[in-house]
Length: 188
Image (cartoon, rainbow, N blue to C red; front, side, top):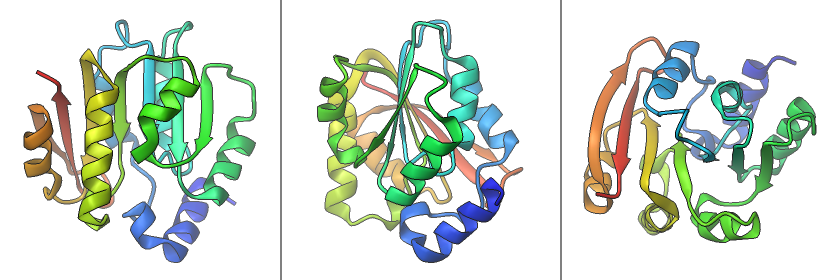
């Protein structure tokens, strides 16, 4: 079964967990990857890697001494990611858990702070309390120069981002199903 078919099947079973019917396009992945300085980025966290579309792009750019912690809530997708990526790349740690526990997860891996956090979590579909907790924990988990890269299918997250972070960039990627909004935020 292809990544897209698995993604669609998971969406039909858990629509609020995925927020999209189709994996991220290569255009969206490329846009996101251009928003980070990969020479300065050692520790990356990805919230909701799904079938690993963006995960693969991150690993292609991640330094040899880097680490990517991919946090996935859906146990079926965790299993799929482990089968897909195996244990061939020691930089990748796939964690079954919630983005709301990112601080604890980083500590368990011996990391003080993330240089970059990438999130496609559908904030507009989350209960307000959970979205708030994720953003608070994200703020607590970013290094002082760290970047938060978010892609969403609505602009509902924008006001919340401004409450927790300095919004450095917002854009749109039309070559995606559905067209996506991209954001870069920092602690400043």
